[in-house]
Amino acid sequence: MSVTVRIPTPIRHYTEQQSEVVIEGKTVGEVLEGFKAQFPDAGARFFASGSKASRFINLYLNDEDIRFLKDLETPVNDKDTLSIILAIAGGRR
Amino acid sequence: MSFVTGLTCKECGQPYDAGKHFVCTTCFGPLEVAYDYAAIGRAVSPQEVMKRPANLWRYKELLPIDGQPVTGFQSGFTPLVKSSRLARALGVRELYLKDDTVNHPTLSYKERVVSVAITRALELGFRTIACASTGNLANSVSAHSARLGLPCFVFIPDSVEPAKIVGSGIYRPQIVCIKGNYDDVNRLCSEIGSEYGWGFVNVNLRPYYTEGAKTLGFEIAEQLGWRLPQHTVLPTAGGTLLPKVFKAYKELRTLGWVTGESKIYSAQAAGCAPVIQALHEGKSEIRPVKPNTIAHSIAIGNPADGPYVLDCVRKSGGWGDVATDEEILEAIQLLAETEGIFAEPAGGTTLAVCRKLIEQGRIPRDESVVVAITGNGYKATGSIVSRLNGNVHLSSSLRDFQEWYGGENRGQPLFSQEGASR
Image (cartoon, rainbow over all chains, first blue to last red):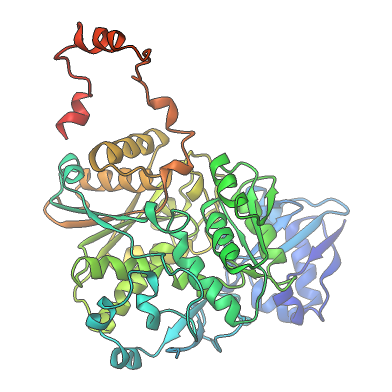
């Protein structure tokens, strides 16, 4: 499945200023692994599982917080959008 | 002049200048304003503060602005109401209500954060103001922007109470109603926060905005004669207020203006209690929830600063609990009948939880308690109106009145026993 990953402004200096990239995967977790492989700096900082920093990032598959779905196990479909949202102003941690 | 030394990441400690930063670029943690307290202590004293106009800017050395304030000259310094009848009803010795239902101009605690955020926004060069809101914040942002002649965008859930939409619309902002709940609005605003050069008070101005909430704590201490209450009960929505009252008390201790501690308690509606759930389970991680409560103004299922609420509640030795919709409505009614104050459901939540904490023995009956009432009931009448009955409808003829009052009803109690005995 090809999933579009949307990248918020403050992360873009870790993603060569790209605002979105297309990543392959069957689950949210797989897409995230693909993202980390493509942008190791961003991956190491924000998505190392269990890291303190990761609580400032929220992930939405299309319009739903993945924690209301199956979290990293959530299956993805072709052309889904995975949005990385900063946990500010009513983010979550 | 400013006593701000910069911004510091609350998580990793990375320092930043006091510019347009709102998240740590190293770890994405939130940023906190740091001050030179020694210099503040030399520049101002409680005696000096007490000579100043009765608004939130009387503590300006402890607020993050460089120059002079631009708005909020009638905001803050709301009454701290000694509430004897309510104290008797709750069975506690010393009870005060911090009454932000009358905060100028839009009747909620939000005037505090907005006055500071908009003043700082202009200092940082923003010329358009925006916010994500459950209603009260939108009202305040709209009003303060209007009086400054600034373009304003407010993003609200499409389920907001009608009075709160009118309460923004009258100031002619661009209202953007978003399908969904506050968390959906917030998500969108987090995405567009820094895209258009707008000053989103609770997104890209958040480090400055949240500082305004400290003034509620400063005022409580000053109005008690530079003393902290033994217990402070506050509502929790996004988690701005409680950590900032904790910080305010700490700052006053650092300055030597007060001594002692106040245990701080968090109140949430049972239908939206992610912070209390984590508190009761002894966890530090907060799981988001889908809100389902009449307390719309605090219905934030995914609170940004929730973990800091937990930290502060635990550090202060306080606690927290939830109130059901029924308990919230009962508390609104009790507050009105005993003290003549009409709170919105957020205030009912806080009072209901205070009552519960007293009954549980968490708040001892012979100590001092302050309860913050952060929003006005006139904006949210929908949930309470069905409980109010007993109106009598008569013609304007004297005979009609006499027949009704002077007849078989004479001498009968017209008021509920519960209300009369309080």
